[in-house]
Image 1 (cartoon, rainbow, N blue to C red):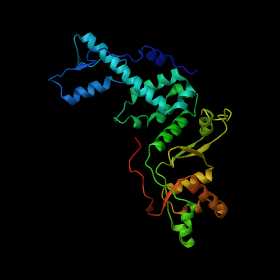
Image 2 (cartoon, helix red, strand yellow):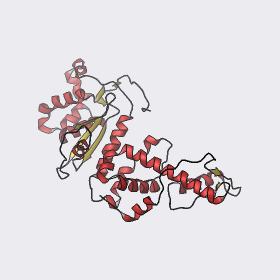
Image 3 (cartoon, rainbow, N blue to C red):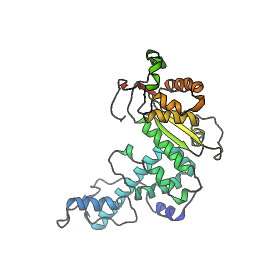
Image 4 (cartoon, helix red, strand yellow):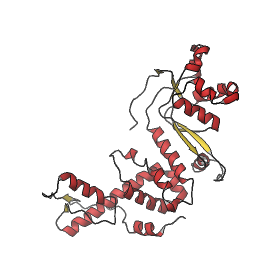
Length: 298
């Protein structure tokens, strides 16, 4: 079990979420000498930091009671964010253990409080935080695992579009194919790692039958896609991964094929067949397929 005593002691000092009584949980009192936006900033500054005292703008039947109520509110707020991160990064949590994960995410919340009321958006910077978090350094693949899980969450909540079939290519003049651009599915996400993070992720799934992979097995590349209601995770070889990334960046079929080198004529049909089979292509050139929705999933 990974531990870091200072943060562990801080986490243990926090109480579990408590139910409030029938009285109002918290009052805010206005200070005439302080603008409202400054009061809000002061309240927000101490909310993710259990070691800081309650802000002066809280009040109640007794100031000590108000401070206790604020601490309950703050503890519940932090716990809800930790639970949200645990739901978004389940394999990261499994790799480090629940106690380490909760302490690490409590520190993340303190340093990076939410900037938007949309809870789904929270955790975008969590992989970078893990990379700079010394106690997690014994698992060098942990930041990439967080990147993978974050990419899967983004794919799940991305916009929808109808995938095309490979028969669509039959209606295009072969001489014009090199100048065509393939429009890829809006849910497509890409993760490249020096570590076998895909194999590690698959080994932690309830339905997985793969043995625990060797973390030293080498680099892996993932194409993450949700062509319908399920997020799919695809392994990709280096050449295929670069080819699809080039298409995603707007390269024409001709330009992307040139990067394949002398083997282009041999492997291009298979790469295109795989792209259409996995539901990666939604339009050719500027003719976008009819979208199902332009917004994110709720």
